[in-house]
Length: 398
Image (cartoon, rainbow, N blue to C red; front, side):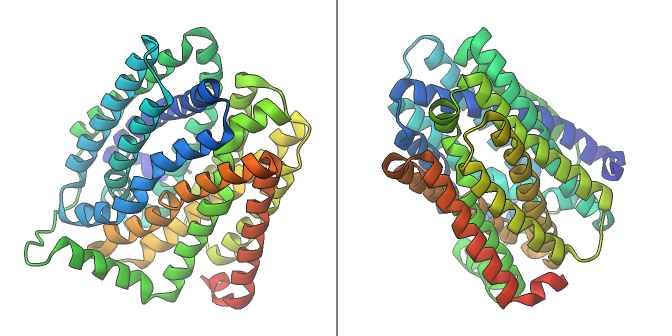
């Protein structure tokens, strides 16, 4: 299950990223609660999420070009340092009671711009830290780190917001970035940056998109990520409203709800790490996609706190199983030359479509209610994934 952690460079990187991710999740929950506390608007919750992700939609494909051209380690040191500065800025503004919704929106946009260049390098650097034999295990353990932090971070946020306030949560996040920055300074990455001065960034971007377009399986996998992000995963932006207005459980209850999906997600990541390079990934992907859709629909119907927790465990399990399998299949299909650009296509649909999902969820929630908004997303996912399974049976043979 933990085979790739025996590799020194990956182990140091993984531990640093894990600490940083916990801090990031603490900030995500605290910031959502801060926005709702300042505005009492589910639409603005969705709008802040939109602003935080729209730069990924605009710039992430260029982030993939940079990941293939330049030293990924240096890119990540710069981007993680920028995240740290923005976290401290948010903390200071909140501590001195200068924070306004407009300032949160500006910081969200700046974080999104940094994420657009950080994510393709972070996704593709794993293949430079481990050999192909350990790739699925390393991707699964990266997922385990992300989802352990998603379980730990929100639970801590609920405690910290009550004890040290929202500004304290933002300071903790800023400090946590030191862990990954130090790790990146310590490790060596087996990647020779490609000097592509003879071709433009736009041409390289087009070449990367052609790789995805000309491979039907890649195109379908990327579209599955996009639909999940646009209609399914956007339920997370409405969690403060759901916790407050439907379940009436407050900020601590919100932390538990977010952690519940994290528990399922962690279970999925560890399961995939233990399975290793198993057969029939496509069948398992199809199964997980349907379970994800049905679980989101059931969550939208929740009136009981315990039932909501139960369904979110399955939402988290299915989402991570599907996304990690798609990530792995894409990375095993692509050559090293195009890895950064193909993974930027993955991030373009995963994080880049999220702003539109967040905005749509906010609008639907404002007009139809939070439960209806989440249910509509789950139904659309169920219809799309069922259509893929029926119309493209080859996906089950991967």
